[in-house]
Length: 129
Image 1 (cartoon, rainbow, N blue to C red):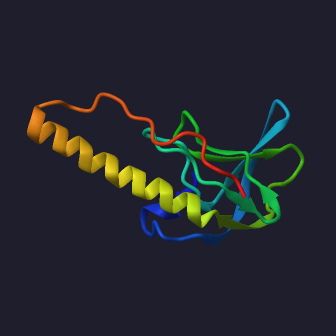
Image 2: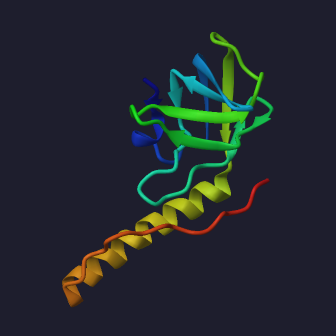
């Protein structure tokens, strides 16, 4: 199971890790690391953009069993590889700001109008480097 570094340091934008599992899914590769600072799509918040070594991430997802898969084009990594993760700082900041703003708005709606938030999707597809 991937250690989620963003739980203890949401400002962390780079980290080193080791590949512990690789799964081929269609023409993509799902990379599982021993630790990661990449936030996956979850709770209406979109995933972080960034790179593992020199490889751009296509997506970061939370698997049904609760692990974090870093999606890249096939045949990029092998179990045991050491990787350096670099997160797109601008996107991370925008995601954090929107996430916090939604919590503030949801609380205001409950307090002032007795209207609970049923669902939310933060932002559209944000930019890539």
